[in-house]
Image 1 (tube, rainbow, N blue to C red):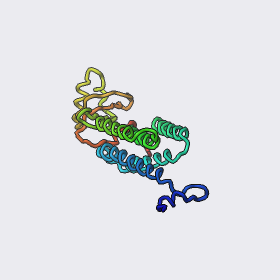
Image 2: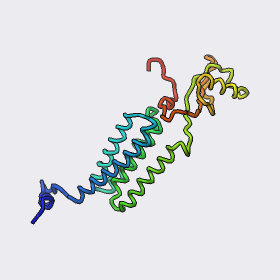
Image 3: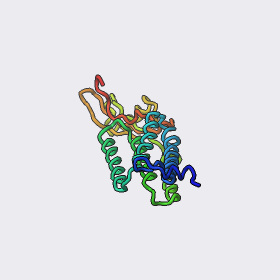
Image 4: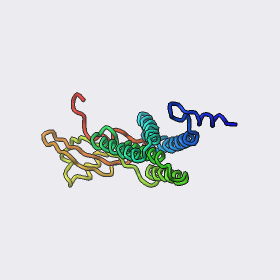
Length: 227
């Protein structure tokens, strides 16, 4: 006696099977696995430092979208071409705009890579797939952990005491910046100098005691009037 699944599998609608049980179960398993792995990276590694719910939302939906776009395509060559096209598009976006910080773009590349790997890797074993995803998690944890790498932030400052920018007064300059900003400044770089306005752009590198990422640190220019 045929079961309900057998009847559904044998049923066709306009020449297309109503359900392929094996393919459907593989789709659900791979989607759940991919969603959990990416969720771990976003929720436990990215979000605790940035607290950016907008990027949390964006990363999650891009993960789902890329996964289904890749896994539901028929041709393997088409899947690979589409995946490479996504990387190229986001690469162009990264290098042609300053609105998206490098940390967010890096996580975006990781999420796209995992979505593509988990959707494309039909021919490899589940053990290899799990190992690959675990390596991604391990490397991300190692690089985000402050035990191995100390986080150094940077700010761009428009400095008014232009007489202190000479190399002979570098220690005095750093001391003045520490006093006025309250930051534990470790290194400075002097950029554009405007002698007419007695001002100079200085990029300061400092150790932050706050674990969260300051998104304003990524601003590399001052807005013009009216912006």
